[in-house]
Amino acid sequence: MVANLASRGPGAAAGLKAGDIVVSVAGKEVPDLAGFFRAVWSVGEAGVTVPLTVYRDGESVEVVIKSSDRRRFLKSPVTH
Image 1 (tube, rainbow, N blue to C red):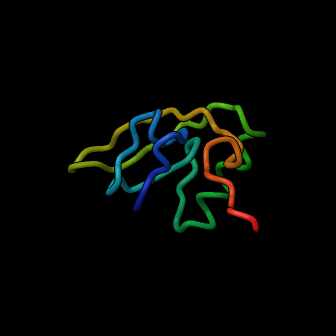
Image 2 (image 1 turned 45 degrees about the horizontal axis):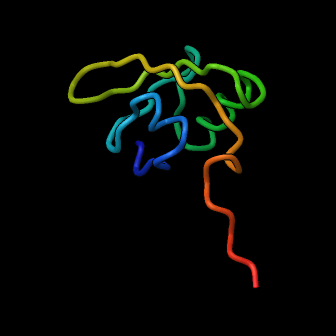
């Protein structure tokens, strides 16, 4: 289940919403978070399009996300 989204991340840009349940990535069912990441990584390097099927409000919804390197949209840790 999508718990949160980075406001500038690819999921938010593609229209994913908190509460969406990811059913499959590129046609492969994902049973857990580790399976989700493995399926996304198997599609290709950052920048490829990743088709997802999500369950939202009682319906299956197809979402296509352009993957990205997390360092491009997440805040960098503060260093002292």
